Image (tube, rainbow, N blue to C red; front, side, top):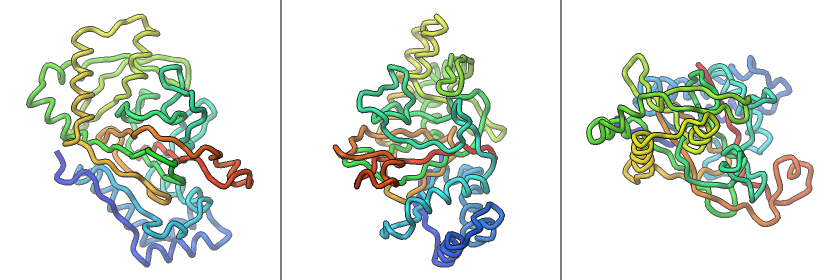
Length: 303
């Protein structure tokens, strides 16, 4: 269990000055971005703390109380550059995209009808993102460009604390979670694979893989009904991850970037609603609406 698994941090004045200088020049290459030394010192510090499990989740607040400090276009420029200095950006869908926009495509859309979580307005389903591909990776970066009209609190869960509770109070459930479950590579390709919900790294820290609707769908597709032992273990896990003692709730605003060890910090959100006349990012930039939908940008990063 970490002493403080979640922290909000902000760049200092020198780091903001370097970012402003970078964004005002024509050369917005990765090499030019690497000259923002004060800002990158902060990123290096966050990565070091996360890798040592000192703090496993951060919100990096770029705008703070000044929502106009950086424009949406500037934030979209910075997001993949921040991810690229942290490691390799991974493909997240069949189209080969490495940066995914997270917003509600259709008020009727649902994970239970085959939609991906990031395409819906649904809440709940505390999860990690590393369920669509069998390969392990490290960091999740989720950047807020715009909030919805109501709801949409981010739920951030201390996975190290949850595993400790499983070990001390629910060893039977933990043993089952350490065994293989079926998973589907939804949105990446039409395939299934097997992997445990909880494994461990070389330092002995637990690593989670969890998004229950995806896993249940994979078991149905494989014609392998979940056993009583598996259902019990999943119910215990979901009860612990939904417990307030294991959660921090934080409503991200424009310029807030959630950065965490994906397999050690489970996350979710409360359900939300966009404004009645809200439009997606492209329509908003084209001037076809005055209100933008709740929109995040998501990166998966392997160091």
